[in-house]
Length: 330
Image (cartoon, rainbow, N blue to C red; front, side, top):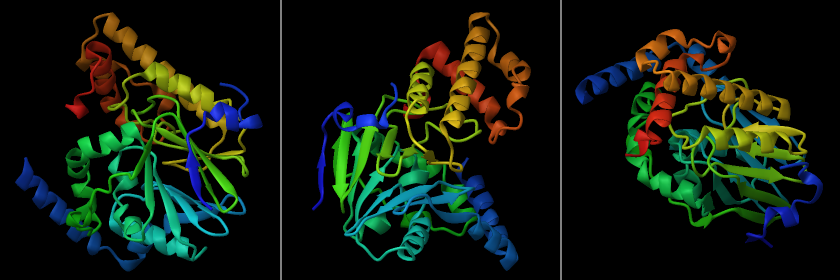
């Protein structure tokens, strides 16, 4: 039997917690697609091989896509729960094929961890199988509000891989929650909870208490500089990460990047606090944005993945500090 409830997590978590220009773009993306398709078969195979499925517990599997977004699935005696569906229906079908090598059980639940399209645009594959989709109410709202922008910023990537953008269909969540929710299936529990906005509003965490595993949304990736364009509060983001780092879990399964630990979460929290304090100080001292981009090089993070995002991060933080707004949602 499967049920879901929204009892306070503090009442059910037990000992798990230890603390709290369109034509040009079309031409370029068309050309990129031709170039990709013209790659030798071995090169295309390497791209496929970057995706692996890791069994992280007797019944929990982590799909790790180094160049894309991850997914997690729980396989029980009667059905499957899936977290995130990847970037495109083609990726969704690939995920389904890999899942089917593990089990033929029906996929009953799909959790959308946050609104970014690279985590939910494969959803139509699983909706066609009759899955029930679950999301935080803010994630559901933002998935609809930002759908056109999320599509626009992925068109080039779709075409470079030979994917048809018209295949993507928005799957609106069937069930939404506010603070906490528990899904029970096949004798297992998935405890879903929200700690406020991190990288964005709606960031959803999923705890598998029987396996001491925690799935994290876009708010965390191991040794990687995150996109700062969506967060309404870096302070809350850092606080949230501190709460996650204090949890008594064995492994953390992030939406991007490889398997991690609480120490990796603390590292990211420290980096975010450092970056935010440095940029906020520059704003308060009257340093212009152009000057900040030139002088704030953060060499201590040069070896982090996505260090190339630094200019965009500084721009995004200047916007947040100076206006308190996020223009992506305008």
